[in-house]
Image (cartoon, rainbow, N blue to C red; front, top):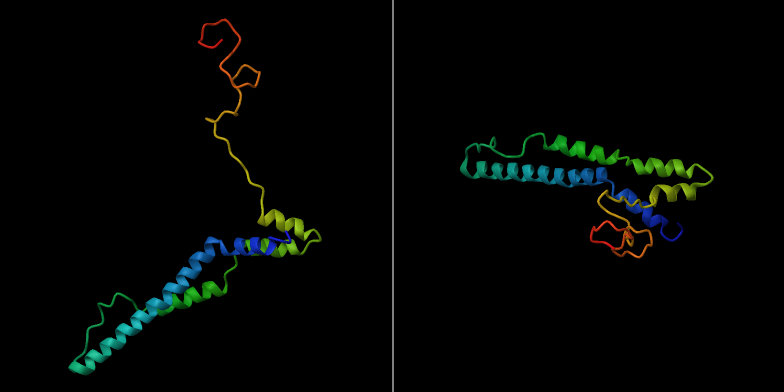
Length: 142
C-alpha cells in the first residue's frame, strides 16, 4: 500500500464517471456562453455599420446558457464521488490501511462460463488429457 497507495487512491477518484460528466459540462458551458457573447457582439457591430436592428432570434445558443454555466459550476463545487466517503470512513478506524486496500485494490474475480471446461482432463480420471475412457462401448475412445 505504501508504494502504490496514493496512486491507487488518485485513480479511484479520477476514474469516477460522475467526475467525467461534471468536468465535461464545466468545459462545454463556458464555451457556449462565450459563443453567445461573441455572436451578440458581432450582431451589435452589424447594427452599428448598417444602422438597422439585426435579428438575433435565430442564434442557436439560448439565453439559458448563463444558467447552465452556473449549474455546471455548482455541480463541480459540490461534487462528492462515493469513493471519497469510503476513504474518509476508512481513515477513521485503527486498521485504516487494511480498509483502504480493500476499497482501492479489491481482489480480482474470474468468472468461468458454463461452456468452459477445466484444462488438462480427458475425462478418464487419469489427468493425462488423452482420449481414453477405458471402457468397451465402441464410442471411438479406447
